[in-house]
Length: 94
Image (cartoon, rainbow, N blue to C red; front, top):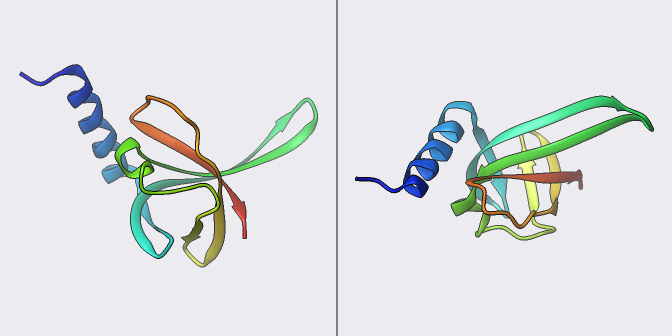
Protein backbone atom coordinates (compact mmCIF):
# COMPACT_ATOMS: atom_id res chain seq x y z
CA UNK A 1 0.00 0.00 0.00
CA UNK A 2 1.30 3.43 -0.95
CA UNK A 3 1.81 6.12 1.64
CA UNK A 4 -0.03 9.41 1.35
CA UNK A 5 3.25 11.20 0.50
CA UNK A 6 3.88 8.76 -2.36
CA UNK A 7 0.41 9.50 -3.73
CA UNK A 8 1.10 13.26 -3.53
CA UNK A 9 4.45 12.85 -5.31
CA UNK A 10 2.79 10.84 -8.09
CA UNK A 11 0.03 13.45 -8.45
CA UNK A 12 2.64 16.24 -8.73
CA UNK A 13 4.50 14.35 -11.45
CA UNK A 14 1.25 13.65 -13.33
CA UNK A 15 0.29 17.34 -13.14
CA UNK A 16 3.62 18.44 -14.63
CA UNK A 17 3.42 15.72 -17.29
CA UNK A 18 -0.03 16.91 -18.40
CA UNK A 19 0.33 20.69 -18.08
CA UNK A 20 4.06 21.26 -18.39
CA UNK A 21 6.37 22.38 -21.14
CA UNK A 22 10.12 22.08 -21.48
CA UNK A 23 12.27 24.84 -20.01
CA UNK A 24 16.03 25.02 -19.59
CA UNK A 25 17.63 25.85 -16.27
CA UNK A 26 21.45 26.19 -16.35
CA UNK A 27 21.27 24.42 -19.72
CA UNK A 28 19.49 21.39 -18.24
CA UNK A 29 16.08 20.38 -19.59
CA UNK A 30 13.21 20.45 -17.07
CA UNK A 31 9.49 19.99 -17.52
CA UNK A 32 7.61 22.83 -15.81
CA UNK A 33 4.35 24.72 -15.83
CA UNK A 34 5.04 28.26 -17.08
CA UNK A 35 2.82 31.11 -15.93
CA UNK A 36 2.86 34.73 -17.11
CA UNK A 37 -0.09 36.60 -15.63
CA UNK A 38 -1.02 40.20 -15.06
CA UNK A 39 -3.70 41.14 -12.56
CA UNK A 40 -5.01 44.22 -10.79
CA UNK A 41 -4.36 44.89 -7.11
CA UNK A 42 -5.06 47.88 -4.86
CA UNK A 43 -1.65 49.27 -5.83
CA UNK A 44 -2.26 48.86 -9.58
CA UNK A 45 -1.37 46.13 -12.03
CA UNK A 46 1.06 43.41 -11.04
CA UNK A 47 2.70 40.85 -13.28
CA UNK A 48 3.80 37.42 -12.10
CA UNK A 49 6.10 35.25 -14.20
CA UNK A 50 6.84 31.86 -12.69
CA UNK A 51 7.49 28.20 -13.28
CA UNK A 52 6.18 25.31 -11.24
CA UNK A 53 8.31 22.21 -10.85
CA UNK A 54 8.19 19.16 -8.61
CA UNK A 55 9.83 19.24 -5.19
CA UNK A 56 12.26 16.56 -6.42
CA UNK A 57 13.42 18.80 -9.28
CA UNK A 58 13.58 21.91 -7.08
CA UNK A 59 16.57 20.48 -5.22
CA UNK A 60 18.54 20.76 -8.49
CA UNK A 61 18.13 24.53 -8.93
CA UNK A 62 19.36 27.62 -7.08
CA UNK A 63 18.37 31.27 -6.82
CA UNK A 64 19.84 33.23 -9.73
CA UNK A 65 20.08 30.25 -12.11
CA UNK A 66 19.46 31.22 -15.75
CA UNK A 67 16.18 29.97 -17.24
CA UNK A 68 15.13 29.80 -20.90
CA UNK A 69 11.42 29.53 -21.70
CA UNK A 70 10.77 29.52 -25.43
CA UNK A 71 12.98 32.35 -26.74
CA UNK A 72 12.98 34.39 -23.52
CA UNK A 73 15.71 34.46 -20.87
CA UNK A 74 14.90 34.73 -17.18
CA UNK A 75 16.60 33.99 -13.89
CA UNK A 76 15.22 32.34 -10.77
CA UNK A 77 14.20 35.16 -8.44
CA UNK A 78 13.53 33.08 -5.34
CA UNK A 79 12.83 29.48 -4.36
CA UNK A 80 10.35 29.15 -1.52
CA UNK A 81 11.01 26.72 1.29
CA UNK A 82 7.94 24.51 1.48
CA UNK A 83 6.96 20.90 1.96
CA UNK A 84 4.55 21.04 -1.01
CA UNK A 85 5.10 18.61 -3.87
CA UNK A 86 4.76 21.36 -6.51
CA UNK A 87 7.03 24.38 -6.08
CA UNK A 88 6.21 27.68 -7.79
CA UNK A 89 9.36 29.69 -8.46
CA UNK A 90 9.15 33.34 -9.43
CA UNK A 91 11.22 34.43 -12.44
CA UNK A 92 12.68 37.78 -13.42
CA UNK A 93 13.78 38.84 -16.88
CA UNK A 94 17.48 38.40 -17.45
